[in-house]
Amino acid sequence: MPVVLPGSGVSRGIAVGRARLLQGGQLEILEYALPHSHIDAEILRFQNALSAARRQLVDIRHRIPAETPDEIAAFIDTHLLMLEDATLASAPADLIRSRRCNAEWALKLQQDALEKVFEAMDDPYLKTRRDDVAHVVQRIQRILLADERPLGESEDGEPMIVLAADLSPSELLQLHQLQGVAAVVTERGGPLSHTAILARNLKIPAVFGIERCYQYVRDNEPVVVDGNEGVLLAGLDAGMLAYYRGKQRSQRRAHAALRHLKDRPAVTRDGVRIGLQANIDLPADLPAVRRAGADAVGLFRTEFLYMNRRDLPGEEEQFRIYRDAIRRLKGLPLTLRTLDLGADKALGTEISAAVSPLGLRAIRFCLKELHLFRDQVRAALRASAFGPIRLLIPMLTTTGEVEQVRRLIRQYMLELDQAGCPYDPAIAVGGMIEVPAAALCADSMSRGLDFFSIGTNDLIQYTLAADRVDAAVSYLYDPLNPAVLRLLTMVIDAGRRAQIPVAMCGEMAGDPYFTRLLLGMGLTEFSMPAGALLEVKEVINRSDFHKLKGRVAKLLRQSEPAVIAEGLETLNRMP
Ligand code: PEP
Ligand code: MG
Image 1 (spheres, helix red, strand yellow):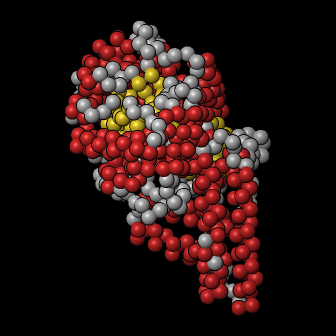
Image 2 (cartoon, helix red, strand yellow):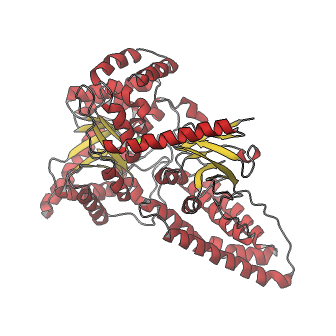
């Protein structure tokens, strides 16, 4: 009997292979009372396991593929630092001595104690740290228990699909480096976890959040992971497996067939040129921008430069980063979004923006912590002397904020003039339109801004009052909700009236399912992860901009998301 287990598809693609049930997160940890004479030996056993864990991590660190974002190496560095920290390096040894217990149990006690501390803090960043502690503790426990079944190794050369309770980024890297790991499935974790980001970067199909997946799948049984649909399928007969293998082959062919589009412009059949730009998180993503043939970097999420470090990057450091990035782009524009901290993006330093997505985050936070804004904007201005840089301000809500930002930028320009520092005096300053108030008042917002970039990820969450990281309300988070579509139309139309460019840089822009809808709404600039660009270009090149306008206008008069979805599917099927 086939079993279909739904979860969250965090990395696209289809994989067919044999299930490999990893015991990660499910280690059976028992307590043993030790005689006094065994304590020193047990502490030595614990210290040896710590050293082995360190060796494993250093080894993984050395074998990280060249193009992996620096952010990933930083996660492993964090785990290495944790192994040095007294809370994990010496506290368990003290517990072995005081409780006279085995090392595995001492680690469990220490982990429980740390979890209580993290829970009391109620901070999403520390929650990530809590997961990191769990990953590091498990690594040591696995060594202590000699649970050394090689990850990802198949008996008959078939690709392996790993099922785990949870996976750390370093474990995923390890799985990737061992041949034969075709996909991963976990019980925990969501699309915004670091492991999910890594799976997408490594192009490993992944479905997370399938509760109790262990209960339905036997070790070594043939299974299918469909990262597009977010499902794990088990109990399939030979015919069904052949069907999915065929699907997998045609996806690979389709992807390869898109490569020829790289150097072709994105132009609709009726000759409308569409701008396709790339979103990046770190300078390490720049090679992918050029490989995809993007017209520009439409969104550089600079907050990632501030993460996984103990200090803050100052003006000089940022200037060098932005200048190097603009040089590497060789004439392509770089849209630098100022610090968008807060909600699910937090720092490990004493600087903390609001945890609530409605609180003091993004530009609100920068306007309170002006030294951060000044350092960043001055760095960006100085880098603008080396190539086309645009500034993008996140989470603008009122025209008052726009005016304040403009005043500050003028002030920083004056300072640079006085210091004799060159910069581009005509630098474009755009606003993220991601708060419903800004969308509703887009006409007046446009007066102080040189361009708009629509942040659908936030605009959808705020319009529908559905926290984007809360799975419990994800059923409400629907880009096709008519309220969202009306706001999008208002922003695009306001931009046209004001004669300023309107781009979209939220995830919706990179999903080919929405491409024709957005074209029909009049959108002509899309910014997306580089990996999505060719697929979107392929849809654009076989679409007719003016025909779509009429059809989409009709669709937008509908009030039921399901009816809109049906109409969109018809649009998408058109040749
Ligand atoms: C958005 O909100 O759509 C966006 C692009 O920004 P972020 O996802 O970084 O909030
Ligand atoms: Mg946003």
